[in-house]
Amino acid sequence: MDIDLNQVSFIFFLVFAGIVVGASLAVILHKNPVVSAASLVLAFFGLAGVYAIMNAIFIATMQVLVYAGAIMVLVIFVVMLLSLREETHLEIWKNPLKQAMIVLFVLVFLGIIISAVNYSSDIPKLPPQNGTSQPDYAYNLGQKEGLPLVAKGNTATVGAATFLEYLLPFELVSVLLLAAVIGAVVIAKRDKLRNL
Amino acid sequence: MNLISGIPVPYYLSLAGIMFTIGMFGVLLRRNAVVIFMSVELMLNAVNLVFITFSKSTAQVGGEVIVFFVMAIAAAEAAIGLAIVIAIHRQKKTVHVDEMNLLKW
Image 1 (cartoon, each protein chain N blue to C red):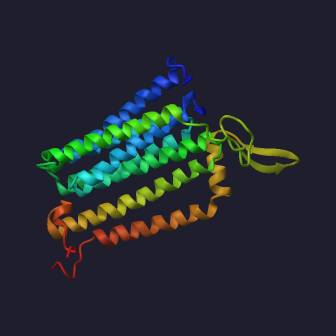
Image 2 (image 1 turned 180 degrees about the horizontal axis):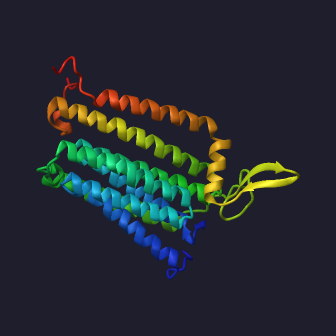
Image 3 (image 1 turned 180 degrees about the vertical axis):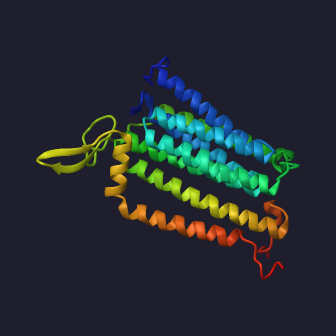
């Protein structure tokens, strides 16, 4: 393993990964759903930090806007609306056999992960699809007046790929969102005929 | 060993694996429908991290576009799932999944 432990990005990665894992554990272990929701926001922010370390700026921004913003507002709104109380019991901790199974699973899982980190082989590096072999990828848009037109930078590249290569999925996602909005309204509204 | 910003690829994949497993245990252990929903979101985020990792390590932009789509679908799922939770709460006055046994024979 030839990594420089003093490298700044590695320290930041450890900090953000620690935030993600700790907050995720708090989500599933804390009894109060409001605390779980707050921990989930923290986990999403930590993951946005990991994306930023990977130089995926556009996705990091979307992570904060969509997940830590929109989706979590919806979740916290529902938690408040239903006034959820603390769960009285997490039954799994009462049974010693189940406890032993979980501890065993965690140990085996961590062992697999550590061995995967230590003995993994290289992933073959594919040639860039439509762009140049720069560290931050680029997207070749075509020619303009004889000169190659290239989208550079993370956001421009992702945008060009979305609207040129993945246009049909993009439009299908917009239809899906419309269907989801209508469906959510229909499901959540009070049935006036039956509940009079 | 492939590096992304000086960090080996397996580190990112391990983080994603740990996060996915935590989410899976949340779904299996918790009985509150809203907390189960949050655990599903954790699993979706772990998969997003894998997409970004391979997108960066193979220098293909497609993975980031798919993560963008996954986020849109997660938003749709959040709207529908929470609407279902509200509808169930209106009917049964609980979001405890053990008490939702109407379809159980």
